[in-house]
Amino acid sequence: MEGVTMLDLATVAAVVAALVTVIGNAFSIDKKYRALLAIGISSILWFIPREWGNELLVALVIGLTASGVYSQVKPRDNQDELLRMRIREEVRQEEEQRRRNDFDTPY
Image (cartoon, rainbow, N blue to C red; front, side):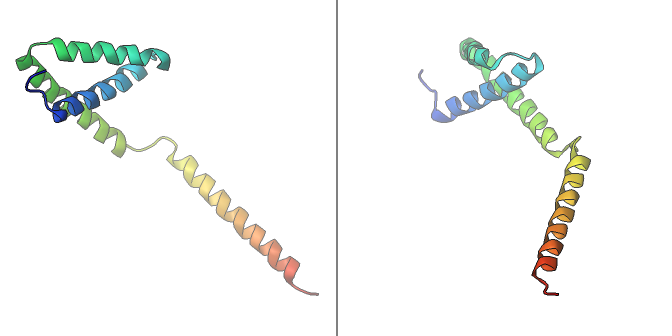
């Protein structure tokens, strides 16, 4: 483990976690088996030659970052449903406030 810094380990751990999520979701791998997948991926990354490993890690970080950024900015399918729910809640609150006002108003 000579020459390995904490930053190296943190980078590999982050890449492994992201890969496990992507691969696990893509192939519908049960969550109880994802730890084994993580061990397998980390073993592959650890035991490949150092020169290849550095290049591979850079490529993975770029690809995973790009895909993560894309998933954060792409439009959500349920955006209209969320807007409808918000409007219904506002209408419900207004009606409730009217009822309270009607109840508090003396005749």
